[in-house]
Image (cartoon, rainbow, N blue to C red):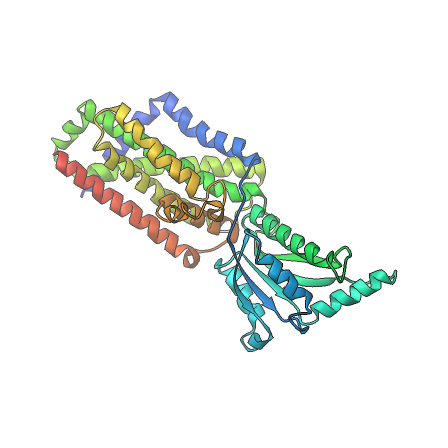
Length: 387
């Protein structure tokens, strides 16, 4: 493979885009409209959020307020309580353990009840009934704050369980308990901070996929592809040239989204922007390859367009762009993990919101790299079959 030929093919494609003012306008305005219009709205109920509990309450389980709250939390669909540690686990330092689980993004939240929780609540109840003031009982909540909607869902369920337990006999009063979440990530994050990485991944996919599938069919029907194949240029060089051109287009779109999101919504970016652009480029190359592969079985541009909803709709709805994977119905959730956009979005959020480096997103990068390599190999094979 000769780099000069690859660059020549890339220049040819970029030059064609430059002379098409409508397409250039679409490439710039589409992501701008997406981040602006959808940046203010969000919907979706979350379910099955992974949560760990540490209950160090010294009161007997049949009398403790913490046990009653935990039992009520188990009945709520929002939370999936995976593990409960008690006083017998004190040797392993369960508080540090569960907080590390949140920090490693293995769970969404960890709830910790202290050893005097029940007695603190009972003292507060007695003080309130006696007409005096007392500090409320407190428990710690460590939450991954990358998604404000998930934070709100967890805190809301905690407040409901606390209220249900404390307004029932033998207490029957407004709960003297304070829920004080401690955000491990995303302090001060808003929905736009969660949304912007998803829009970047979605824009990269939509544009590179649509441009590649239509461009290949158009060049094939216009015999441009046949003329290229009649030259000394190899199939791999043709595919690499297209991948480079459309990968750069994806990068330009990402820059538009970043500039708009920072300037208009003041989003925060905690991590390395070079990692962000690397993931976008790999994902754009893979999406371009997917468009090439599908275009090989389409005879006309009309047939090529029919592939778009088959690929785009599942990716948009099941990859976590607009709502968390935990909000996807269980029957469809396995499909989410076969969609490359899922890993692009998760990786981008981990860098931009969590501030993770290469050691934290290596798995997502590996998936995107594998996606790009496999799609380019399949594209080259499809072109060789045509020759």
